[in-house]
Image 1 (cartoon, rainbow, N blue to C red):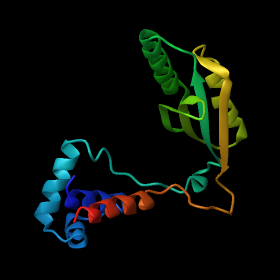
Image 2 (image 1 turned 60 degrees about the horizontal axis):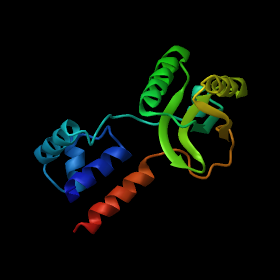
Image 3 (image 1 turned 90 degrees about the vertical axis):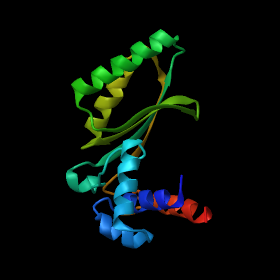
Image 4 (image 1 turned 135 degrees about the horizontal axis):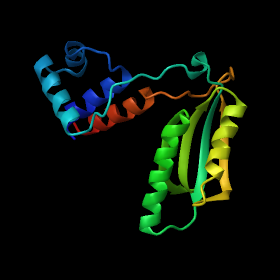
Length: 173
């Protein structure tokens, strides 16, 4: 990516409500250039959405759970059926999932990040996961974050990631 594109993405991650005029002033290009680059990045899928991150505890959530799971070995067709089963079930349950992805690490191949109003709400997700025969129920573990804890190290934000992207742009000089 070009430096100006990385700078624009970085600024939008810090505050997606900025006008193209303000963005142009910040990254040192013209407003039409910002508009053209923004439209291009949206069309090419670099920018998927504009959003904000609320204070989840003020919205009534007390727990953020990072849950790791391990699937039993599945053939390609079984894996697709499992993916569809989970996708359909998520729609029915209305769980507050932030992310549900496959991956690899720590002996797990799936991760879920979810929000909960209380511990009982978290337990419902845990029980829900245990119903799937393609998951190894002995290999489901969670890390729970108390969103009401006064000691916070670095809450969820994209500002730090935006700084990293901005530093990548500066290295392109």
